[in-house]
Length: 547
Ligand code: G1P
Ligand code: ZN
Image 1 (cartoon, rainbow, N blue to C red):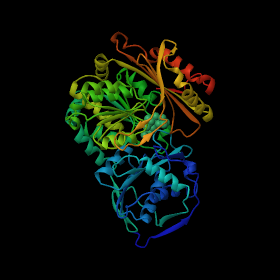
Image 2: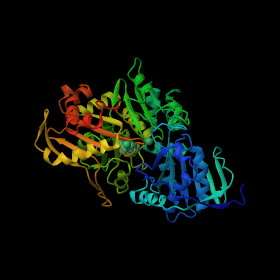
Image 3: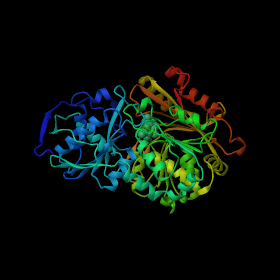
Image 4: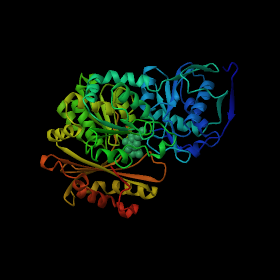
């Protein structure tokens, strides 16, 4: 017990002032480990907030390398700053959606989440930190901008001189005048899931022999999935694989897609495949859903879950609306139209869903980048999506593939793929976008390959709730047959530029629903390459990742 812990003020110098993006500050561990670097950022967060004296802060992360070190620094700085209590996940663990859940349920002032999401972890890999507000979601732009401005002028930080706190034993201890409460990272989250989904029906599904595989990829969702799927829902032991969070994720690149979740994909497309396969990312907010020998695109997943949402107790009253990020396919729009509810098109990044969810304008939301969620928290939520699929399968008695094919039969299939060009020269990538902006006005009505251009624009968004305007959110190249190509540069990469090309083609004809995705999109891929001059400008003839 530290009876006389004193706060120490350390003189420091501003750091490079990198703007924390929508996902907070992400850097190599080596950058964070520089003297005062993490401390400067944490103090910049605290200096940008008002009215937290005596209030609670939630702290936790995805368990990657440097997580435990950072938790200790944050605890001592929170105590020096005057927080009344910190709720920290046992072992420093909290998935991003669980952190959002705890912030909301415990009415905390906010939270600090330690993660670089799906980026690899380890001493030579990435680390990250972000601040979430009391509503449970990522800090809005005004707050991240204030933090950024502060990093450029910061001269001092304050930290308690105290021994490290035991974060592995549940219960309360004191750090100076502040209470540190080590909480079970799974409990509040699992309790919330029990209110949303029909656990009895899902349990009957597993009792009846339904088999699934959940790949936690050595990252944070292992304890959550094991407790909920195996312990509470009765899925067979071993359903969860790579279920222990490791500092380097066991060498996995914890990004649940067809490329990085290869072990899972091979099993689901192999002999004796289970009925459902799912994976989540480093911090637990992303998800990939597979049926037996069948891949569900994230856009289709949002559409199908929206179509059947009312079978789940938490959504039995119907949806207020759906929200999708602009590059996400328009499959959810067709479901929204049939349900007579709005479908909002927002810029990429989860924070844009927050105002819609808070205002009751949307209930489900999703991004093509394997992110799906609802108004139960203010982050996307990987395991939530898996549970919703299980609930829909249990309630309808239909397989994953049957559900998606029935959706296509009713609404048509939106053939969709994203091509990423990673590590591209930044100037070349910016030049490509500028080129598209420049030729845009002249393109309407022109014929390219088999397509006629309807128009090209640079997506801008006015938030219908707070009126804030976001410009330059991606180039949309629209064709008269409803096909679309979106070009945008990643905001989360840590080396060079990543060009993302999102390809989408509507296929109403059921006779063509079995067509291979890349084959179906081949003409559109060629047109996208030609219009944007991808090969000439980036030197790349093939994307690095296709999802
Ligand atoms: C990527 C995804 C985006 C997601 C973000 C944070 O951002 O494309 O949908 O919100 O990660 O998980 P990007 O690298 O494209 O800027
Ligand atoms: Zn993530």
